[in-house]
Length: 59
Image (cartoon, one colour):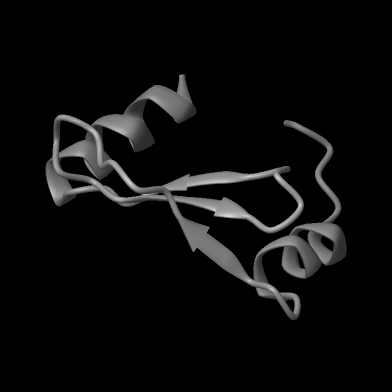
């Protein structure tokens, strides 16, 4: 969908510097992480949010 290279993604989130946690979580209480190269934002999800997101992605 986004033509993302798996090796580039892994280097961004698993490289020497890894991820850094953003200081203020969202309203849902989820945590946000940013890759060291600022290319990827990762959000933690609750199970209910995951199900909703999965349905959204499939459509």
